[in-house]
Image 1 (tube, rainbow, N blue to C red):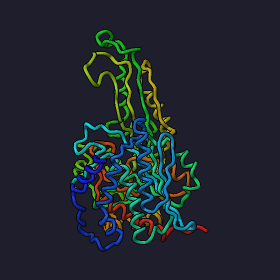
Image 2: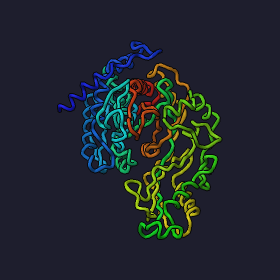
Image 3: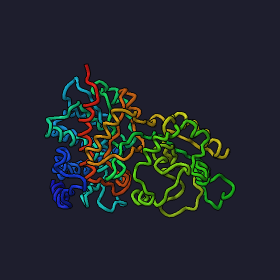
Image 4: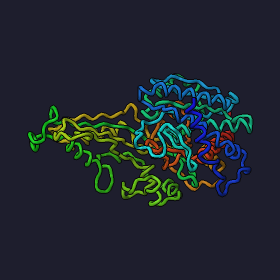
Length: 487
């Protein structure tokens, strides 16, 4: 308990509530004003939640996942929702329900409270689970991805409760605890609680905004599937001086296969890989081009040092509308400790494939199998594992009144005009959700590209949380105008 109190004193002493930004007056909009006045409290609550190390897929932190779920359920109840903690595989999801009228339209919000593993030695601003508030940001694993996003929804409903007595439509929050390991039990969870989760529209909150001063509705999400390629050489690690030059070196063989994945123009060289990719329309290109973009600024924000990829497409088109294959990890030989001067027995690489509109995971998987069979030498034993069951297909939000309502909500929440539309470079269970409930998906996140998701020194811009929560509250008002009531 004493440690928790020390942490709170430090947090509240780090910085005052951020000032109102130019073009925004606190009394212009009651929702923004309400959230502005309670931003310190929101930051304190998020810091308490971030301090719970709810790491997905780690048996040592299974209890923390359960504790995180119960913490969120308590926060939901404090905001006036009915909340249930639901067991899902080795984790727990939280279902919060605000039902204003059974005949009113219903929105289902999807997000997650589990977080990625950490390398504490790489964190400079704070220890991963010792949240610190500094320069208008809150640092800590999960602050942006995605505890901050989930909490913004709770506080949006709290604001509407305080100002209007509640939301104008029914809102259900499903915050799962296995997203960071591919949501292996989400389909079963959705089926088990299908009646309680039935909805007219889904709001997916595990995405980013373009810039703090340039909000833009996300209107598409790339698909995702992971693969692992292992190459076997000798039956055991062998002294390099004994067999060098006369046996398969799995590290070199794997490197050659991975190098063949892309051509000199940045395109994926897997035969047939682009055959099913939807062609970019002029309208979509114009929406991307309307966003403020500068290559030097982008490299600075993302700390990527350089830009590469398909030469015939802009950076934003590559990010949101084109498929990719990336190498996530390589393992062979003695990467740590003193070298043994051996040719390793095997070498392994993990791959992340992002699919674009109209591609299908099953077809991509077959293309990968054929590609590696053709580029790996006949005397190299290998195994290619593709996690098709955990893959997620791409999704694009239909154009129409719902998307227009989201755009208006962002303009209210940020008090500035929307200048374009964007995509989401990552993936998630959007396709699963829309197929399960036969409902369209709107994307609304509160993160930024510079928040360091999955990396060291993850943080969230607290003004983004305020504006995001305001946009969410306005979204429920806007959707009430366009969604039909149930008979």
